[in-house]
Structure formats: C-alpha cells, structure tokens
Length: 586
Image 1 (cartoon, helix red, strand yellow):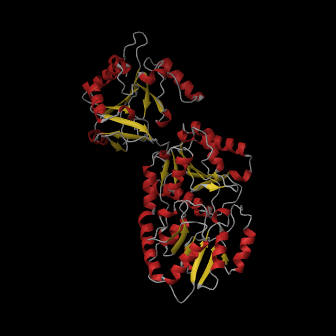
Image 2 (tube, helix red, strand yellow):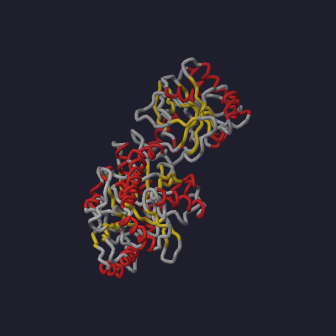
Image 3 (tube, helix red, strand yellow):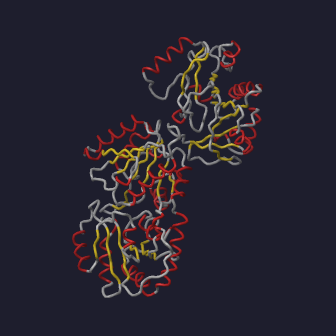
C-alpha cells in the first residue's frame, strides 16, 4: 500500500493519515506500507509510525509538472495494490492526470476534509477544478464530514456516491473516568489548540480574551504556525500577550498533555473545519467544548453535548457560552457526560476498521496483489453453494444477459455441457444491470437453465432487488469464458504490452499447442481479475487462471480456463474444451 501526504505534522489531516496506516497495520499486519511526502517542509511525527518506508519526494523541490510526472511514474512502476492520497496537491494532480492509467493496476483512493477559502474569498479544495473523468478513475474519496460531500455534490457536481464518510478514531487514552466536578475555587481554564494559521482564526481568541477581562477565567493557546498564511499573526500575538493569554508550543505527546495540565474547556474559533480530532479528544477527555457551527462540528456538538456557536464570528456568543459554564457548572457536567458517551460509542478504532474492511479494494489482499473493486450479488442458495466444498465451474459470458438468440444459444450449449457432468456444478456470471428486476432474474435462470447466477458490478452501483451482497470466497474451480457479445471484439487483445519473456513464452505455446493456437483473450476490465498463468498438461499447453474471483490464490491453480469463441468457418458455437477433451489431449 502506498500513502501520499504533504507531510506528517500537527494537523488533524496528519492524524487521520496515521489512523489510516494504523488501521491497515491492525487488519493486515503482513502488509508492506510506503509513505511519500510531497512538500519540502519537514515532518515531525514520523517517529510515531512503525514498519513504514518513507520517501521524502518534497525534499527535491521539483517544479510541479516534473513532480507530477515523477510521482506518476513511481506509482506506475511499483503498481501498489492500493494508493491513498491525503491532502497532497501533487498527489491529487497525479490522480487527475494519470488516474485512468494507474487504475489499471492499483485501487486509487483520496481523502480531504475541508472546503477552504482563499484570501479573495474563493472556495477551494483539493477536489476543485478536476477533470471530468477524475471520479471515474478513483475508487472512493474518504472524508470525515457530510458537509464536504454536500458542497461537492450540490456546488461542484461531483457524484455523491463517490464519497465515503467515516468517523475518526479517538485514542482510548482519552477515555478517563467520568468527570464529576468542575473546580469552582480556581478560574475556569480555557484551552485553544490548533495551527496559528488563517483558517483557525487565532485573532478571535484575542477578541474573546479581551472581552472577558476581570472574569474568573484564564486562557491558554497551544500551537505553532504551520502554513504561515496569516498576515495578522504578529499583531495577534501582541494582543494575546496583552490580554494575559498563556502561550504554549504545539503539544508533542497528544492531547493528554493538555488535559494533564488541568484544562476545563476547549475553545475553537475556526472559519472552516471538517470534524476536528482535537474536538473529539476533548469531548472524550471530560472537557466542555465551545465551537462554531462550521464543517461537520454540529454532528458532534449539540445543545446536549456542548456549546455550539451559530455564527463563527459572533464574539459575544463565545463570551456568553463561557459565562454559562462559569455560572452553571452542574449543567456543563451533564453535557460533558453526554459528549463522552457519544465519542466512546461512535469514534473507535473498531468502527474505522469495519469501514475500511467494507471498502472494496482498500485493504491489501492477503497474499498480495490488487484487491478487486467490484460488488457481487446472488441469492442465498448460490451463496451457500459458493462457500461449500462442491466442485464448481465458473462460466463467464460476453452476452450480458441480453435477449440475443445467438449468444443465449451459445451460453446454453456450454451450460448444458456442464449440467450433464455429474462432477461439476456451473455458476454463471453476469453484470448486475442484467438483473433489472426479480422477474428478469427469474427469466435469466429459465433461459440459461442455470439456477446459480452471480451478478457483479463496479463498487458504486446499487444492489439489485431480491439479491444479497456476498464477500466472494476463494474457490479452486475452472473458469469457462464464453465468447459472444462484447467479447467478440476482444479476441487477441491485451490490456498492456507484455514483456519480452511473456511474448517468447506465448509464441512457444502457440507453436506447440493446437488448443491454445490463436486463442488469446482479454476479459472486460481485466485489471480487476487475477493474471493468467501458463502451464503444460500432457502434450498440450493450456491457459490457466486462478479461479478465486475474490482473491487469487498464491499458488498456481490446478484447473483449466476454457475459452469458447465462435467457429471462424461456420459462425456456430464451438467449445474448444470439448474438442480437446474428446481427442484426449487435455
């Protein structure tokens, strides 16, 4: 797996990047994980990663056009099963420019969390101004908030089903015993924690501190400038010092460092957010939270769990919320308890692991190789058959289930052969759009005289009515590819140029085998299927393919893949496997 990020520093996106890596480590401990950082700024949290190979591409300070080409070439050559780009401009540009080609061998994912505003007020995110095919090439965009999805779908025309919203993880270290008191003998200790950058609006903290002079409250600010885009930062620092705000460097040992110093309240003043991790950590740690209604904060902060500020720029509303905590600490404790229960229940590592497990093609497949970004649907009887030890034959057809007489006749001929054999049960594979309704599915079973049909679809398509989604098991069975339909135009084609060794081996097989001669085929969207291997059987070389349609076996399969084009002379269906079998050569 290859993760691409600008850096690993103190931001929330940096923490989520590490959470993605940690989830892969928990669920696939044998996986090989690489991290490419694309910005020249140094990373300060790499020591928190275990077993990750890091390449600092940003250190070379390449021009963007060269960086895109080099990173794209790196991915194309390494062919990692999964590529995940998190908030990297260079990484998003690679997906935009080379996504269609890279998706032939890798499952591509992206993550971003905030719709930002440029100094002139223009909305901007890593997803803005992408090509029309951008979402066709990537498997999904992972984010932690619904508002980003709503904005991209309504304002930018992005497909809403390309997004997956998940919860961040709050470390169990931030689940202390329930808080029962707020010390009334000492001033209320209010903590502001974040980057000293324009988006976080540190100047509002100065406004609030100035407005609360003389009240029993003290303010502490934790953080550093990361992006350095706030032209008023110097003046803001002067105002903070004058108002008595205690400044601290960014915490290096997690939010627990802040909690250990006796904090009572977390105060956020940002213009834009996703769902900040520091907010969830504070809620889990027994702090009151005062935060503006920006991003997806309202999903966690309500009148039951904290103090939500409707207008992020309303300084008086912040002051009123802090005054309410000072004078009504019993009410604050009730909200603290509800907030803690919410985070413990919904923001766990197990929850993130389940989300990534359900995300097709994200987690590296045991044994290596790209995972298959398809969904599979069938009835309960066929699902039980696939997990049994029955001897199966998987029949893949190019007819798409359309009512074309020739294609159906050809498919029925092949299925009839396998139905007559007592040692095999055929399972037919068709695309999910053939299953338009339960009545259509019943018709397909009648037409083909095949009770066991599995329907497949790209990851974003919906489940057909009347069918159950399955996680395909690994089955050691032959695949019989039946020509016709869209396969007619694909005989002899390849997905990519083969190596010299592969061409030499194929030439030897064609020259020595009457069965394999002139019988090269590429399956539709073949990047999603295991690679074909070749081996000899008796005096006949036959094409072999691993028949686990979920995850390819790491050892060579022992069964044949049989390919049945139409006869070039008569145009009639001619299953070549029957000719080979009858002649005793296979």
